[in-house]
Length: 254
Image 1 (cartoon, helix red, strand yellow):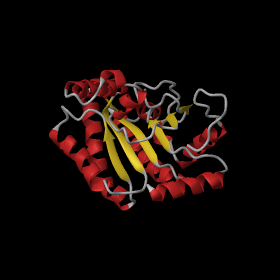
Image 2 (cartoon, rainbow, N blue to C red):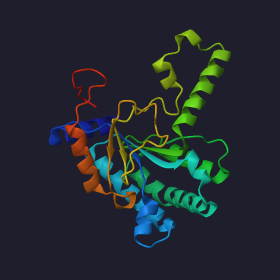
Image 3 (cartoon, rainbow, N blue to C red):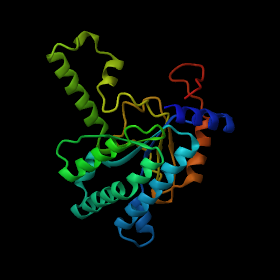
């Protein structure tokens, strides 16, 4: 990813601290944002899409190479049917209205999560987003859709068992690196920074394996109000952290 490598290095030098290579965001607070204004939850979700557009643009400008968003969890299916339908409608409109713009801006889209069981049109939209942008070399936007970290680990375990069954994997050789190779996107680096909006302080089954050494920042801002200034504030907080990865000496060069 030469384009983003150069931009990442330039932005890190300009700021005087390492910009995270990979930022993951739990986009929380759409419903609370709407309730505080006497608006329906659906309006909060629509404003959340606007915040996503701003954040994708700001992340690219900041030299972030990978941006992972928790767009829809496996647990979200338990929400009221009307709300789920509204969220699916927003996904359809986002892909139809924004995909061409993302492609034009050299953004590559990747999707993680369970595809099996999705409606045909949703599965087709996700595949279309990946196929159209596959050759792009700018920001990689990773969409965690129908995603749960425990479910991802279960899928990885199932894939490893199948590999053992085929004689392609020796169980005695399984280690941390092996497990990583069987995750949904093994080629994407672990997030350096995980952000959760709305003031909640938990990971909610998001990237549990990958975030083992991520810096966690929880902001009070509800997702619809998240903007470039909020992102820059979080990046500054990240720049003040010492990342030791279990050692005694801080490591740099995210």
